Image (cartoon, rainbow, N blue to C red; front, side, top):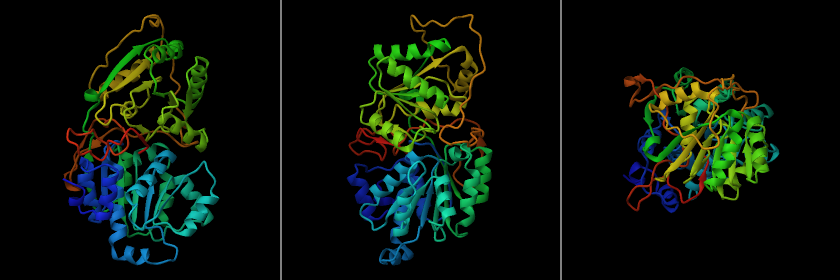
Length: 457
């Protein structure tokens, strides 16, 4: 199946082909026709499945080909916002808007992205000029609403991307305030990695007889990611990480910590060891986060230390190493973390440094992924068998200011229609990024195996 056979316009197919992709991913095969049909959609899809193209491509088609769109595109007056895409993080918002521009390069549509951490005045100026597709984080969009600098009265299509993470970050009130000002008659698309009770409640109140799809990534973590555990005492984690990086000559390593303070401390410690590292988390300015991501992407930065929410959406093609410096207190986040590697058909390595405090977390993770992770004790870093567990400091405010970070359950619903929905327990597939998927054996590349570059989708 090609993109042209999905009903997309020649201009969109041309842009997709020029970018190097010819074969749709599974979620694109299901989502694109559903969105083109004009109905609401509830999609269970992790980052890395190709979900972003799954909604941006049909949105571009609808807005550029319907009668209303044709009239607006030929009008020189400022255009109203017709599609609104909400994302949980700044990085994800920026990448989604970049995708809109890439695939809409031969269309007359325009787009804008607005998020916090940067000046609001340039955003106000851009909005005044007219925007067809707006990508935004909830907080900054509310700022514009309160200042009267954005008009959402003409929105035809609403997309909530990574809705589960938005709820994790405490954005539910912001989302409800935004929904209250939107036209009642509109198309709604909701994408979520998991279907917790909160997500189901949100979907019930937002969606009208939605089509429902759920697509996992084609490659499981077992097939493409080598996972291992290094038991270690809590005060030896930093020396062990330095040892692993230097002895194995790791050149590009993504390291996850549980807290922002822990990320900052680790960056200082690695710097003292002569290892270049930068951190990204909610307390970092947007310019600092952008710079760190850019340097890590181009290979000039050896180690990027991140908290879970700040790193949401990071995807670097063929990233070789992910290290869990701290295990996440939410088991599903382990799968999201290690899914940053082992993409595009490449193999990857996920290493976890586990102290006695984290044994219960490890058991929860192994229960979720239904396997026991191999353990390897590193000579010189043997853990003290008499060590006792201490309370673990849980993450707080990673990327969301003082937002609440509670998370719902990990139930995934695998259904085709609303009438056949049957919940089942289980975790989410690994989260990668870009447009998902491994490269097939043929010369045609799926929309998801970019040429050695980073995407933050």
